[in-house]
Image 1 (cartoon, rainbow, N blue to C red):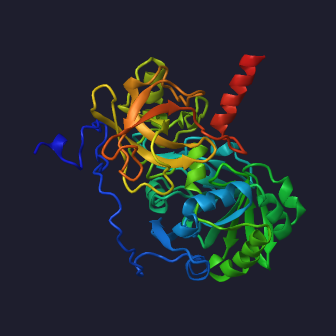
Image 2 (image 1 turned 90 degrees about the vertical axis):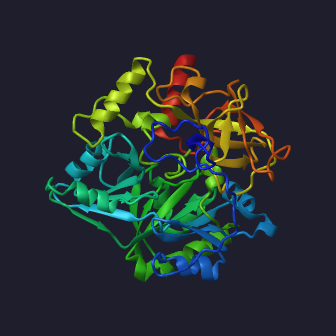
Image 3 (image 1 turned 180 degrees about the horizontal axis):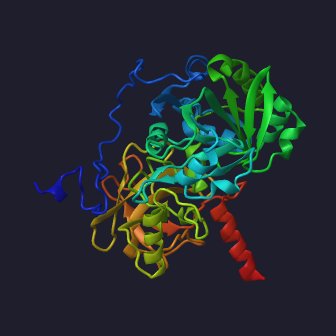
Length: 451
């Protein structure tokens, strides 16, 4: 059997990766999660699993993370979607660890770590950022909180970051301390999230701008509140300080208030974040993915004077793209797909093929059913050569006629064993309550064109 014939390594071109993704279609073998002391329990573990009945989990930043609260027979993830989009929900996201960079050189070091300009972030404000390696690969895409002039918190996605930052400082001698601190966030997301937060911390929470921060107390415990979230809906995050001691005294009144407003605890809303075009590190990108492959090119500034890790590589990539030479094999796009409704997490990167040749040419990273569009939607990598130019940082403003076929499992296929048709689609599929910088730029460009 040749390498290209092996089921781990189909004919999808991954030649620009050192470590190809395992694209074998193994499905869900129904295995059991082992709970042991090698993987940490968060301060909210008892609340989520023992009291609220989370029935499954994953491991995120080496911590158990609840990913199912509503039982399948009661509607499962799609019942959670309804609560998120119609009322209000509480999420246990303590796995989003807080890596603190604190000291006289905190701003200088943070500016060196991220592609965007850290000097422009005012105290008590945050920003979505990316950190890259020297090749321009995305190492993490945290929300960066500047809690003081000399203190930044990286609220990280699912990749080790503390050791990276500590390693970067070996030989650099920035005058900082780098630690994971005892802070655990929870998210309150949904249309009624502001009503909940007003009841919990007071009217002043309504004055927080998007990515703004506010110090507060809940049930006598100190917290930091931000207007941020992973859903595309209206939402807030509550960062519980000294969480090992105070997690429950904050959790209980917040969850009680959520329930008083008709809401519930749910798993993080991946169905809604896909609709919003929000990326998930590990699924939609990793350390071998360039920002220009996943519509994050706006994070590579033209006017940042300071040096940062990956700057040379990213500027070379940007120059080639501007010259009309796209330097990557695959590009992330949105897809609308036929098939039966996908109402749960995909256990594999489902393969994408060329409808003309039948050759496997790409893979789906994040699929789900959209009740709003009444179709399956997905993010996925397809050959850049198949897409319309230009490919600079394109997120399509309208659905295209470009077609692919997606090899869904039989439970979702229209005909077992046969792929379904998919077309390249506009992203986001559903607008966010607080548009990202990329979405804002698109909206501004559209408004300018109409004037």
